[in-house]
Length: 226
Ligand code: DC
Image (cartoon, rainbow, N blue to C red; front, side, top):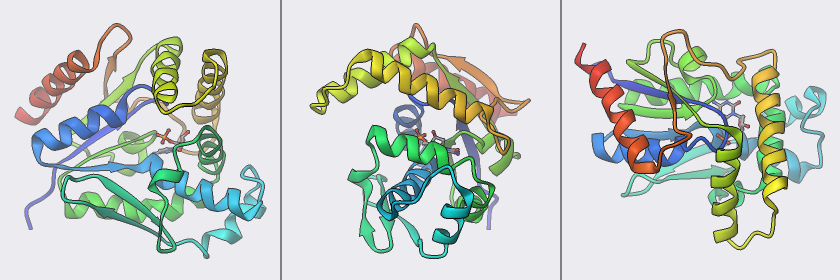
């Protein structure tokens, strides 16, 4: 079997990783793998169980009761299945963001997802986004992009998105959540959010989606030519 190509996109919440990765996947015919959705699915299970997401003692025993499956529809959109239930539409809330961030700091949770994530990159050409894809999951990825933007800009984008969905959350609340999640994801001991040494940083602060997409495609072309 021909060796597969992997593109890793890491960065903080709200940097536009999924929008960009989805567009690139479509353009290149790669499979888009959203690893944050896997942590969110575990977060949902933990929330429903009433366990403390910060407590390894409470979360780790739950892992053996969790079966996560990832399905793809004809358009390449990812469907998250939790023990046979489609939870794709349930994992995008602010509460689940915080649960996902909390459980993701537990080493056993990361180990639980590692094989699935690596397995997908073995079988398919992938563009995978997350926090530790270039550093831990796929250290040999052909292209590594660290996608970032100023916290205020990320909060503004997220706030607009939430407002369009009918959420009444204030901008200040969204910014506070972004800052809290940045601190938790970057400050944890295991697989913290940081650029891989060989990653190209793309700061989209002053860019719209088309500009960001063009810049990302230039990086990919440059790296895959070598
Ligand atoms: O990308 P996201 O916002 O859907 O991710 C939700 C949380 O999951 C994020 O705050 C940290 C965690 N996460 C992680 O630790 N490692 C990944 N590769 C992806 C997400």
